[in-house]
Image (cartoon, rainbow, N blue to C red; front, side, top):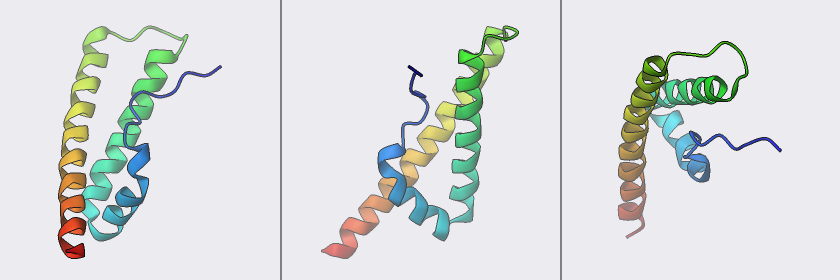
Length: 87
């Protein structure tokens, strides 16, 4: 059984992400970069090929976490905006 990619933490918010990507090109670029980095990290950590230095993987994890923080901020603002429009 294949292990799930632990870096794909925004799967439950796909509709909001798609809406944000349509209205904000910067968000789209950041989310695309996050997807690329999380996929690459997953591949590096689960490959049986040549080992990659821990420093390199740690730098990628750090960069991915910065992107996650930025995406989370956008999603919070988006959800607050949606909530305020409903009231």
